[in-house]
Length: 295
Image 1 (cartoon, one colour):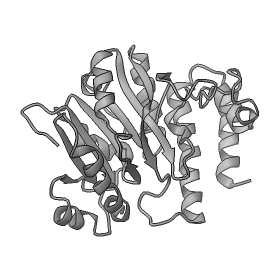
Image 2 (image 1 turned 120 degrees about the horizontal axis):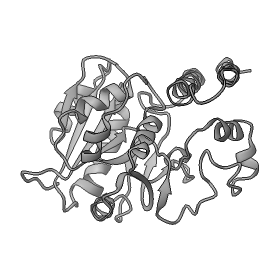
Image 3 (image 1 turned 90 degrees about the vertical axis):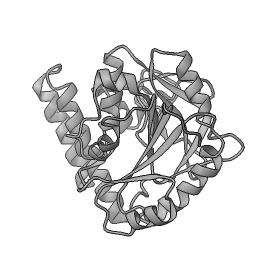
């Protein structure tokens, strides 16, 4: 981790009761990337008012990172914005605490920085994010969740026809996942963002407490004329839905799912409510209620 007067990359990890995952992630991040990078990189951990020993552990065992206490659990966008506001690095990276950096150069973010340096129209790049079992975390490779794309996904048409563009727009699975290419959106679990583009488009919308704030950000960048890129040459592991707990359980999974579906309705209201007939909004709400009620 080299330092000079100008930072190239600021990695931001938002934490909420995630000491278990921080202790797993940070050694891999340091060993497999920070100790090897040719760029000036800093690490910031923002704590959203955790009730565990996260802050104590950070300041005792990981003094090489900057720890900031946000003061309250205001959600994902709120916490990340604490570190984004006034940030002077050329690029910022949002990174979940429940991730892992791989050895042998597999998680070398320098390659993505070099790519973005050459492609000034790219505002955001996602590495290939894989789940613990080696499968793709589909959230890193998404299309715009239009009413049609969302419908085909939730009724299972995307699963039946993953290579058919008409039915596979939600995750754009018809594209070649082994090549660098443009996508509509990626996940806030691991995204590298051009800071000059943030200054033009604005920070994350903290009206979203959890979920959809990354989709919203990507849409705003695209609307401003920027590109979002999927870069599968670099890989990061994501132990999804584990942040804040040692292991998942049914209650936590249920609460997480409810947040997801309700936030999608919020996203629809922000970007599509005025573009479609009112009855469609009622239909969207109906599907959301079905999902959140578990029926």
